[in-house]
Image: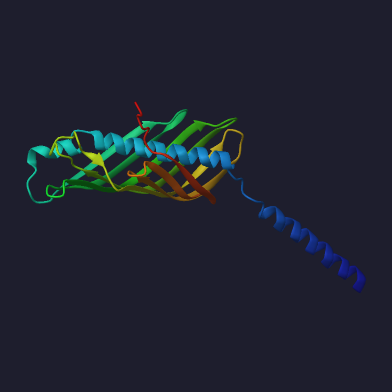
Length: 220
């Protein structure tokens, strides 16, 4: 009788362990290629929004010219933009910021922050479509230096480091049936003097470290 009891205990332990293994099956993961593609799209879309906002007549350096004086002046602004994703869904961003003009130093500085939302944002990959749903935060700063032309945009050049940060979380699903969730923290830095752009941080537990030339140089 004791031997039978011992066998029953062993059998129960094996069965319990098997159930436990099934319960902690590893979560599906995005591939390195998927992560790099999503990182590039996130940064590209947000920088497109920010460049569009900066180029708008109500927030660009040239718009301040009519009211500039000798003392530093500050303007507050807000904005909202949305864009359709490649296959379906949308990418929406909004924010507020300040623009500061220093007439003595001929500098124009921008500091802004806000939120971004990807709603059923679907884009094709190499073999499958990835759909993303999630929200996050962003911050951005950029700087300009005025030239001899004074208040006109001519002679005004980017200066210093332009820094943009992104953080947030999202759910993802592949058309192949896999799905999961991710968090991310990224920093984009444009070195206007070196003409370089770097994008570093973590995305879906993967290390991101990308660099490239910021603007094409016209040698002609």
